[in-house]
Image 1 (cartoon, helix red, strand yellow):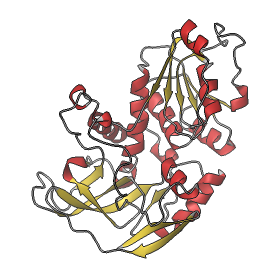
Image 2 (cartoon, one colour; image 1 turned 90 degrees about the vertical axis):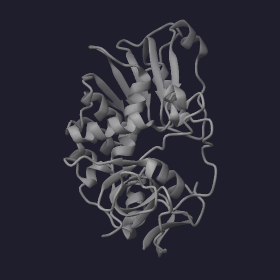
Image 3 (spheres, helix red, strand yellow; image 1 turned 60 degrees about the horizontal axis):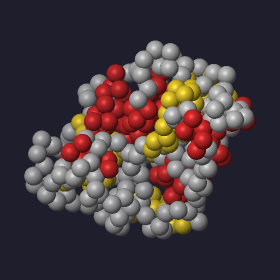
Image 4 (spheres, helix red, strand yellow; image 1 turned 90 degrees about the horizontal axis):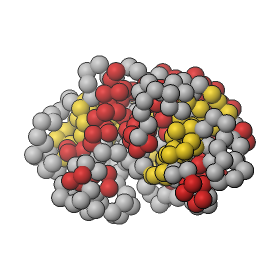
Length: 340
C-alpha cells in the first residue's frame, strides 16, 4: 500500500508498505479521507518529527478486515478513529476524564503508521461508528471538531449574552468559531493576522474580525477593556496572543489554552487575582466529546462546505498542500485522499 513518509528537511515522499494484518481486538480501516492537522505542519514543515514517520490522525474510512475479538465491528462498517477508553481505573478515568489517564504517557513509544496511507490499523475500542447521514469526507472532521468542542466545554460558557474571543483562525480556531455558533453563541470575535483566514472566519460565523494589534492592553491590572469577553480561546500557540487574550477578559472570565507553542507566556498575576480570572488548558478529548462531535457533524449545523477546502489532494500532493497552508495560501481544512 502507498503511504506518505516524512523524510526530514520538510520533505515527504510516497513509499510502498505491506498492508498490516489486524490482530485480536484490532480492525484494518481503508482510509477514505485524512485531514492535515496543525500538529502535522509542526512535525513536517517545522521538522519536529522523526524521519521515516507516517503521520495523519484525522481520518475516516471503511473496515476492510477484522481480527478476533472485534466485537460489533465487521467488514464494510464505516468508522472514524478516536480515543480509547483509558485504563478505567485511575482517578482521571473514573471521573470521566480519560484523556488525562494516568497510565497513558503522552509521546511514549515509537510512532505508529499513521493515516496518510491507504490502510490504518486501529484498536476496535477506538472506533466510532459513522451515522448513515454523515458522509466519509465530512466525518474526517470528527477529531478536530472534538478538540474544539472540548475547549468550549472547558470554558463553562453558557447563557445568553455571553461574549467569546478566539485568537488564531487556524484549523482549531475556525472550528471553535463554528462550534460556538452552532451551540447558540452569537457574539464571537476572532483575532487573526492572516487575511485569508480572517475572511474564512467571517464566512463561518465570526461576528467581529480583527487583527491582533487591535487588542488593546488595559493600563492597570484592575482595568477592563470597553467590551470584555466572558471567555477567550487561544488557538494559535503564540505567547503574545495568550497574554493579549488574558487582557480582554471580563471579571471572572476564563482563558482556555488550546494552541501549543515553544515560547512560554508571561501572565500578569495581579490581573488574574484582582479579577478572579481562570486560565485552563484543554487537551484532546474524551469518548463523550468524540460522540458529541459526531452528532454535531451529523446534525448539519456546522458550515463544513466552508471549513473544508474544495480540492482534496492525493498522497503525492500532500507536501505542496502543506507548503500552501504554511504560506497562508490556503485557510481551510485540506483533506488527503490516499486512494486517489
